Image 1: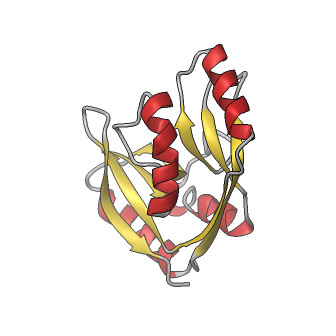
Image 2: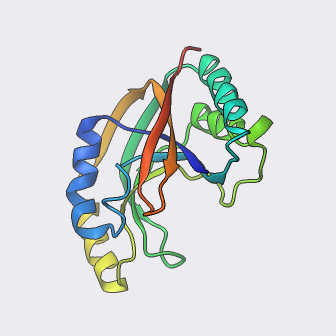
Image 3: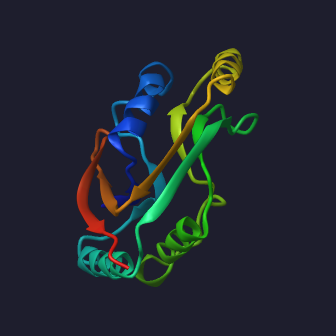
Length: 169
């Protein structure tokens, strides 16, 4: 079973992100706007209870996380991906590290750069045009995230919530 762990921002942030994702994100219909904390990981059905127990322990010792979105960036020239920049914080980094330890022990594929994807698979011209337009906008959101969600991937590549864990630390 393929799982991942994400933070879902508020409806306000999701609506803003979706206003761009509808046009610029080829994976718009597969998952709601989110911040990935633990990338796609294969977990056996027999290991799943241990993973969920571990995630509950992490959530129980994690306090709600301040999420600050500040502007729009791109991964170009490496990838033509457009995203809302989430300011990295110690709390976000600690959570991400903990989700790569214990029963979920693995080295992350990429350096942790918290973000909310709003466009992908763009041509160079599209990316430059949208990025320049959005840089003129003041994109700032600040909110408190109180839970994380374990997602699972279906065969058609859509992602659904398997379970959510409230931060109680």
